[in-house]
Length: 290
Image 1 (cartoon, one colour):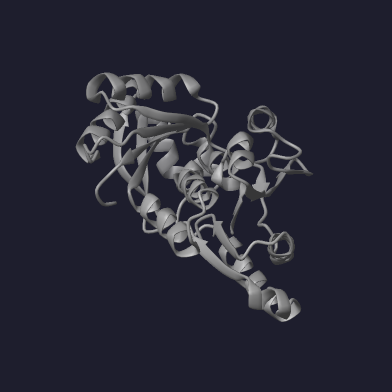
Image 2 (cartoon, helix red, strand yellow):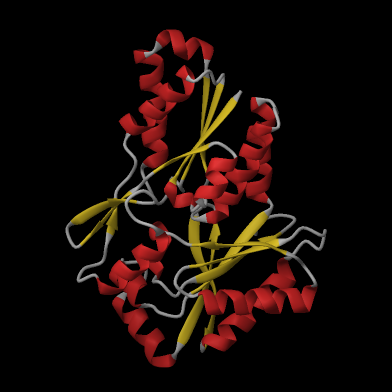
């Protein structure tokens, strides 16, 4: 049996995690001096409300090696032969390294169990449901009794076959988090620039800038039509506290392409803190990520 473990930054809804037996490790979020465990003490909707009232920019901490170790030991004692652990982008967090260290500790502290159980630690190279949907697909394969090798390949193929485009309507959070300079944010706000971002090679790139919210939606629609594979696969929309623009983009894509939306998902703290609560995006089915 294969056990799937990931972190709460994957933004997998609780129902999906329970349905496919995914162990989601909560990321600590500190807001004005008080720490919450994402998805346990605090729902995404509750986080948005606290973010809007926060005096200082909230911060996240990583899942510790010992928390990963506990999860590995729990899975092994439950009778799983294989563990596949997927982490948030290693270039933006230390959780991949923490999980790798936990794998080493597991072999040292539980040598008998370690001989019976394989542990694969995978860097998603991504954020939010960009890798969350691939984790769910891998867990579905595991639930169907697929081998460890097949489960890993399902995750890798799924990760490589979707590209994300994010739209930002507010540069203040990106400025405060250091993602853009104060000068760039000021100029952007004065001129009404709205950037379109993508995740590529573990990094975040700005691939377009337009003026105004409606042009932002139109630009993302154009990118979708340009990049979509056209092989019949559906798309996903993601958004923080900006459901209106997320759904507007969804409806335009459905109307223009007849492609099916496979689901709408909330963007959690790991992305929202750095991009602001008005961020929204689309996961595009592609032939190859560019």
